[in-house]
Length: 320
Length: 252
Ligand SMILES: Cc1cc2nc3c(=O)[nH]c(=O)nc-3n(C[C@H](O)[C@H](O)[C@H](O)COP(=O)(O)OP(=O)(O)OC[C@H]3O[C@@H](n4cnc5c(N)ncnc54)[C@H](O)[C@@H]3O)c2cc1C
Ligand SMILES: Nc1ncnc2c1ncn2[C@@H]1O[C@H](COP(=O)(O)O)[C@@H](O)[C@H]1O
Image 1 (cartoon, each protein chain N blue to C red):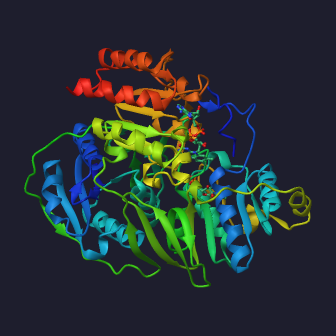
Image 2 (cartoon, rainbow over the protein chains, first blue to last red):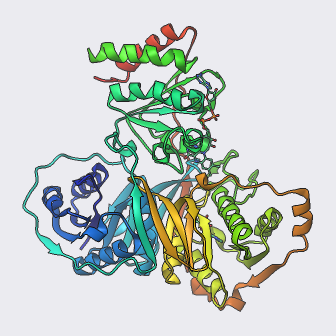
């Protein structure tokens, strides 16, 4: 029987929305799901996963799991998988998911489909759609052999249903020795009370057109006032005007919010690949021929330094 | 792989071959640049390895022109029917009996956007992996320090060598081949290897050796042409915001 093992993700002690999306989708398909929950001081979140429908939650809770590391996480997912007898493993295509998906699949001697944006499931027959070639084409894929299905799924594709926590049926995993070939020293966290890109329903992004750090700070209040995540193009992150975690695009975060504001961004393919799935795109650029206008629903040809104050004023009125 | 910066056409479930131009995947150029910097710094040698059809040799020549010391071309015509799993298995075979300290690849290939090959290879040859690096430091014979772009910040990781890393394009700006480099590349060794000599049976090749299969390619959903507003920002922003609220239910 089809059973899905979902690898849960945690931030600041809470289950991330991208994980809830996977549970909601499994439930909507009438599929049995289980969870593997890894981290430090995370056991308390098992009830949230049970509330989402996880029939068993496999828990690896240890200080050594505080920061993601390939070695221990792979072993723990495999351990959970062996106990669970799940026929599919689902991860999100976060940085953790991208690292873990191929490693887990290879250890089980099977293939994987990564960064899937549409999924059709008939028992363990799967048809998956995934963008490729900088989103200039979409692959319709299948698994061509029998065996475990390992899939990573892009955030924001399915909607997350709010559910009440429920008492969880838990299994405690024993913590494998880690850090033999790899030693994770630390995670350098930049400001973290911000809205995360792949959790946001509104994103305000700055491009090279903002001109520098000051330009970023000129735009940031608009993001704050909207409760939006603050994004950026690669040009901005490479110049060091904002930390890399703000980067939207193919090598940054792939996003699909309800509203995306592109300010002073030209719209290079790698940027578009990461945000053209947004429901509504608003662009401000002083170059009428900027490629961003080809994807924008509302394209304002003009200077962002003049446009942002008006945007803030209008938002202020709307928020009343 | 095909240059994805150019127009890509999809017809009858396939990518239209005509008009494609073949290049080194951008992330792979970043990986090569990193390898060159390391050898310039601490000594050693950079070898390029690719599995692909005859035309892949052009990319190897280009990499040699950038400064790589030698190249290995595993000749393979079934590239189009193969998935990352199949490539990782063949790479494993190709690496058997060879010496290396560090394997670098792109975080993903620009055509597949899969990002699966390197970690699968790492598992098959039991090496540690660090994916998506944006910086490195402290390269020694035994280890390297890697800065990985993680979900919650930059993860700082010491990796024992040999090991595998995949690179984020922010790591560096790949150099261009100089005229001299292009001339010198012609004299550098480019080893050609047939699959048979690697003892790679038919079951490991093409569709048979793959675990996943692309049924067809489709066109991405295109966005419909939106509206543009030109003029004084005080007016155009208001007009756009009004429509954003009335048509698109912004902040509703
Ligand atoms: C392998 C690879 C991966 C990449 N991945 C990514 C990625 O993930 N994300 C990403 O963003 N890029 C990525 N890039 C880089 C990408 O190709 C572009 O270089 C980058 O997106 C450009 O950023 P930009 O639009 O901010 O800058 P530019 O292209 O320089 O555009 C700046 C824009 O600002 C406008 N402007 C200037 N002043 C003003 C003003 N006062 N008011 C209004 N408009 C103004 C200009 O008209 C111009 O259109 C990648 C590239 C490669 C090769
Ligand atoms: N046929 C191949 N030959 C050599 N390297 C490859 C091959 N296929 C994939 N790779 C490497 O693996 C990376 C990721 O590929 P992919 O898993 O397709 O995204 C690429 O950027 C290459 O560095």
